[in-house]
Length: 224
Image (cartoon, rainbow, N blue to C red; front, side, top):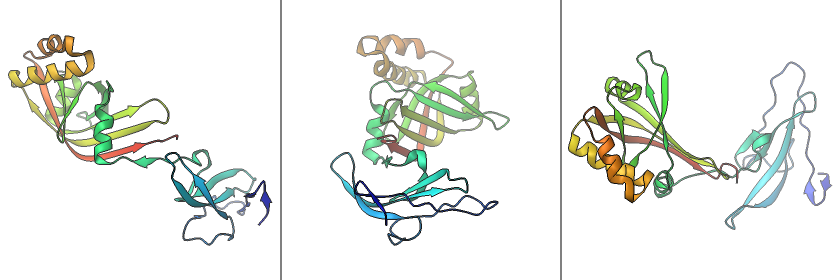
């Protein structure tokens, strides 16, 4: 296998015109040195971990690189080297409650189309808790169809997100609405203004929403 600078040189894997692009999987199931693969070599990643991988470069009929291979097989070339990881239960809980990250709430309109709006929230056990007006679009959507999802993301490198899906339970109990509105206001506006937002949002016409989380998809270090 040709070498350049101590590393295996890319191997071109061509396809005949008119056939779909090749996406050869090169991983633990493909012997190093087979067509399209070069390696193995060790790859150091953040945190002191080292993984053994193989490298391959796949090209279309015009010589354009369409993918590269790593430990998980063929991936788009632009994502080569990304070491994204799933968050543990403890990690996603810490992630969604860090600082003042808002949630992007997706609900279902009457015609089946999605509606997305930002919400302030807190986590209470396995429930994501927030307030909304009974007559808002999201309030009406949730009263009709309790299915909902909330996405919380970190917009700073190395980026990450947590997607929480479940069914919502609505309450108009003013005492509970006010208690949770205060807790939510405290998280986002600070202790000194929590009571203020509790009074503002703990009024008739406001709902307490508990999203009972049934599914979590949470990924960290998307661009590490």
